[in-house]
Length: 275
Picture 1: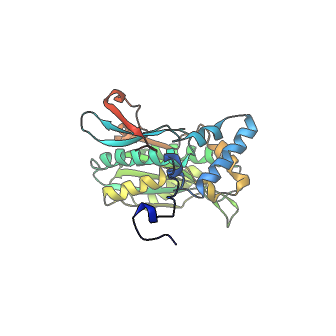
Picture 2 (picture 1 turned 120 degrees about the vertical axis):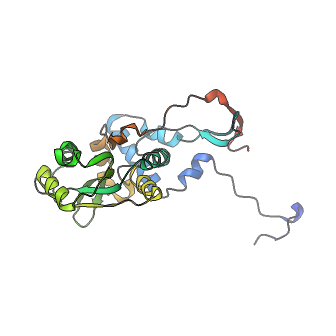
């Protein structure tokens, strides 16, 4: 065991090597990070891309900086901006949670709505097309438009081991007066041709709204919960598809961080490893 004395000459244990900023963030995702790396490696092998290199370089450069006006000190870093990168996804979720909180403060009566599809053995791409088409019809239908003042929605897909298949669904935060569940269920069953399971409940606080957004806005799914031989299928099926959206009163909500416009207002204090 290490000696308890603080005197240098009596301390025999070397301090553990300090992690880089990227290594520190990756340690928060012990299962998801390797699953993501394996999936991007498979995709690169399929088309000769360089996604894995981008992923491994994410947050490799990091430095402390101070804002010249308000003297805020923060860590700035490089980013890969890949959809399935756990670090970038969490950064997007943090930003979106704040954006949604601002909109929530203007809502008269916030609700949380979940829309699902019944299990099917159809290819995932066909299920996604079906889900998006049905949701678009629900958004545009006269009944919902008359009762919903604004929507923010998030797409999710899970792998259900019990059925050995995909479970795509949509979570939505909406500002609406009371809507009987049966009214939504009836219309959802019509638009999906048989899927009637929906859930709607009140969202009582900004904290609750932010928590739900943080859960749903990170990534459209967790790759570590998907069988390895199915991960690439999921990534490719969702490539280029919109996984978060807003309409009506929520249209003003910023869904992604803007590009920095005040770069000249930050002064570098030193690299993450040095400070």
